[in-house]
Length: 299
Image (cartoon, rainbow, N blue to C red; front, side, top):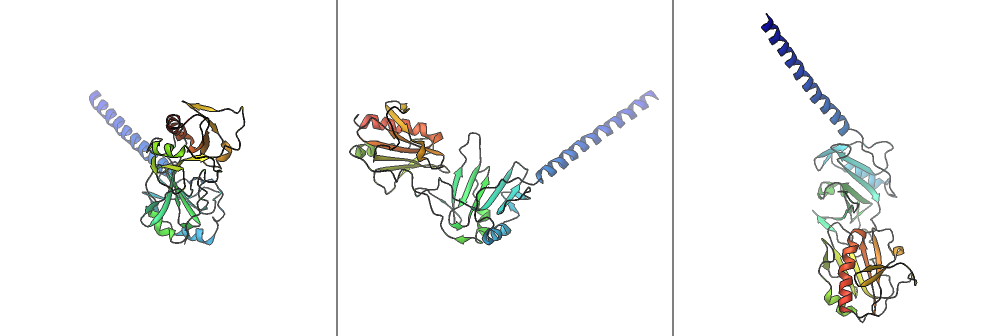
């Protein structure tokens, strides 16, 4: 009798354990599904055309699934011209219509062709961030897609036909509006410059004289211009940044809202200006400064 009682108790305990495990699994799935279906919060940004008929048509034409994520609701208050797809409230893709092209998009910027549509890619330079935003560069109003992946947004190309085919206007190229100075040292500098001045960047040709550009996918260009005039905001006694043999003056007023800064090399026979994103600037200052120190004369 005791043996029978023990077996019965064991079976009952085992059954209860199985029920509890199943309850936990189904409960976790229920919670996960509810989190996944929770509305996605999208903060408002400046987007003058977001409430336009074209943007409404674009949002209505978007597919129900993008990058294997289902269409999600937007949390109240819902900004105009937005849509989202999400696996969870964190693992999401958002699209905005009617935005401005970023300041990084300049006359030197390169777009990527994605099945006939031209997109401009911007990777978030914030440390620890894996966000990438793609801007539809030949449509108006402009649409922007943000996701934590580098995957191209080709699934949105069909919906883009609701927008006018009109190339976005680029911002002025970095350093282009600086006044010209002496350029006697520039020929030697140009010959000595490296094909790469920071990780991932490669040099490419532009038409402007004494101007050198290095590009990286999804990153703001590094631009150097030789033979510019003395920086207007430089004053004797201002703090300089000494990098090896070259003192650099950082003119923050020339950044114009981009993620980049502008530096001027001092102490040489002519002036050279450098425009670079903050996370690549130090490497560029070293590479270009070493060229100046080796191939140009001190003032």
